[in-house]
Each structure stands twice: as C-alpha cells, then as structure tokens.
Amino acid sequence: MKKEVVVIGLGYVGLPSVVNHVKNGHQVTGFDIDQRKIDLLNQGVSDIDTVSDKTIMTLKEKGVIFTADEKMIKNKDVYIIDVPTPIDSNKIPDLSYVEAAVKLIIDKVKIGSLIVLESTTYPGTTEEYLVEKFSSLGYKIGTDLFIAYSPERIDPGNTQSLKAKIPRIVAGFSEGCLIQAQAFFGSHVTAVTDLKTAELAKIYENTFRLVNIALADELQKISDDLRIDVGEVLAAAATKPFGFMKFTPNLGIGGHCIPVDPYYLTWLMETRGIKTPLIDTAGKINDSMLDYYLQQINDYVTGNKQTMTSMTIAVLGVTYKKNVADIRMSSVMTLIEKLKTMGAHVVAFDDVLHNYHHKSQEEIRSLAGKYQQLKTFDLVIYAVDHDSYENKKPMIIENSQLFYDLTTA
Image 1 (cartoon, rainbow, N blue to C red):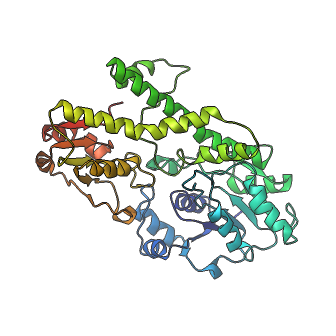
Image 2 (spheres, helix red, strand yellow):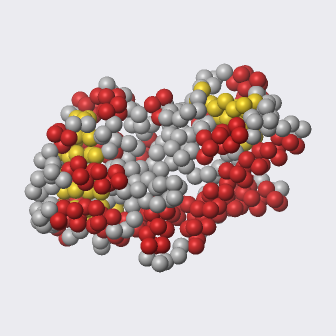
C-alpha cells in the first residue's frame, strides 16, 4: 500500500533511503535542516556519491519533495529518522540529533503513524528517546502510534548497494509495531525479539569490523619489524576458502561508523559497570596507527638522506575511504596537519572529493591527470587508492622523486 513517507536527514543514509522508498512506490518527502543541501537537491544536484544527479532529477519527476519547511511534514503515514549519531571529544555518545528529530515530529505525527529510527545507537535509545517521549504525551504505543527500529545498512561508495535489496533487521516496541514495520519494509527483513536486540546487532556489526581491522593493524607492525610484506601475508591467508575474512591495515579508520559506533557500546557498558577490554584495546590500536605511520614515513625520508624540515610533500587522496567524497574523521587530514608541524610544506590532492564536501581549512587540489607536476615534490605519499589513481599508479610512481605507499596491503 502506498504511504506518505518523511525521511528526516538527507545525508549518506537518508538520501539513499529516499531512493529506496520511492522504488517501493511510496510518496516521499525528504527533510533536512541544511537549507544549502535542500537548495542543491531542488536544483537536481546530489552531494552524495552513491546518488547521482540523474537520480535526483528522477526522484523529483516522481514527486519527491525536498524541504527544510517543517509545515511540509505534518500528518504523514511514516517518519524515518536518519540523523547523525556522533561522539564528542571524550568519545561519549551525542544523541542531540535524535533528540532534535523527535522534537521536530512531536506535533507532526497523526494517529496511526509509524516512526522508525534507523541511526546506529546503543541498546535502549529507541525506548528512551522515542517510546518514553511519545508515551508521556498520552499516546498508546502499538495502538495510537507505532515505533520501530531498523538500522541502516548503507555502504558508502558502493553504487550497487542501491540496486539490490540489502537484508535488514527490524524490531518493534510491541507486536503491533513490528507488524506495521514489517509491512512497510517488505519481505527482505528479519524480525528480532525487541528494540534492544536490533540496536545491539547493528552496533556489533561495526564493532566486529573495528576489532578485526585493529588485528590487521597489529599484523602491519609485526610484519614491518620482521621485514615481511604484510600485503603478501594477507593475500596468502585469504586463499583459505573458509574460516578467514580479510581485513587490511589502516592509517586510522575514518568516516562516521566504525570509529564512532563501538564507543556507544563501551560508554553504555561503563555506565553499567561492565568492562569491554577487547573493544577498548582495538580502539587504542586504531588511534595509534597515525603516529606509527608518521614515524615510518620519517624513517623512510631520513633513510634517503633527507629531513622533513622544509620538505615539499604531495599527499594523494584525503578522503576516509577510497572512491568516497567524504573527509569526516579522515586520518589523512590529521596526517597532513602533523607533517606541517614537522616543518614540511604539504599539498593535498583528491580527484574524487566534491567541492560541497570540502569543509576543511586545507586546500584540496585536483591532479586532473597532470602527473608530471608530482616531479616538483620531494616526496609523494599515496594515501588513498581511489580507482582513478590506481589506474595510473605506475605513472604516479614514475613521476615521484620519493614515493611512500600507505595502501600496500
């Protein structure tokens, strides 16, 4: 049955969510407080790599409304909350965006509305921020309103993820809530017992990745000490067709998921008096990698009878992930800052990064295929293996006086 759907938050999760709900035949309104983003979308311009400008135009042709006007989201059938859930400088959860989203719709919902939180968060959030809030206003959850949790499974940079029905989990506050959520999302969902189970399942997915990447980081250090190529070690191990999953070392995990979500869990358990030593150690290993690689780069430079002081360095790739135009929590940006404090003159290049995403004081240039200009630098640091760079890597190396590869694994 066709529903009137509101998606709150039009970032890397929300905008693909709009696409998927339109594909399922619903009438969708996309809401965001960022007027600049709304203006771009209404001009047919996407600021998300996985959603093309052509797709935005198609959405508009199918009646999708992009707005920052609260009056446009009143009395809808379904409200999907896709807002950020960051951590602060002390790695404590910041749920202010969820709180603001709930406040936004508190007087917009109608009897019978389904409200779904998709943002990754700690177990108990949906009950604390949605169920308790609406219940306090006199709504009977499961009869007057229906509340569910169904975490997103977006893979930034993977355009194919929009073309497939990615399996997802869903939970409702009550049986009635679950029935409503299942009917809305369709057949590709797996129902779990309760909201907390769904919340923990999602946060475990990303914690699993953090822990295994930390193990790969440690393997990098072991391999370097033994003078063994870590890339070859991983490739050899990956030939085992069962019981092994390949993770690669990292300058420092960036983005808005893996370096954030596990701390929602560790914070929660700390408030309950439970220690999480494995997750804590994985986080510390991840945090240590930038300084480790910085020392490796410095050793490489001094081994070639040069010093960082007054050295000119080109850094290729600054985004947190290959083929993704996003510098949120990018360790490369921090690496550049540290290189500068050592006296180096650094120029950053990234041919994937969109201007809209560039919210840094650092000037990001485009190579634009002019690899000869790399000859003017004392050192080229190959930081992110975007496909556009990988395809020309031999030429990049050929035009480099010194070349240091951070992507060899």
